Image (cartoon, rainbow, N blue to C red):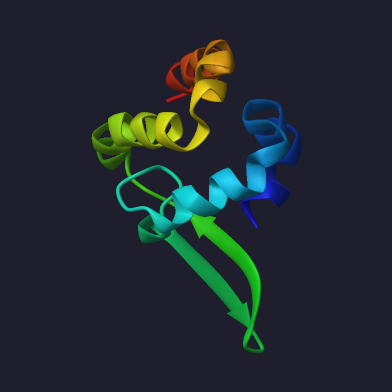
Length: 96
């Protein structure tokens, strides 16, 4: 569901493997896309929405592990996309 919220953004960052990357991050603990921080909204026993939520303090604690997992999952593609990651993180820091 997270792809619905920022499809173009996630595809531009992660490329054609975006679904597989997000799936792997979702399964792992202690990262910004983890199942630990994901809540599903059910309507008539069907998923109708999703919330991915953590505090700023929690985000600060999981940033490093998110980066580590991205390197582990994406291999050399992480370094190819590194400038995009830096630009996005700079934008997010400005808006906090």
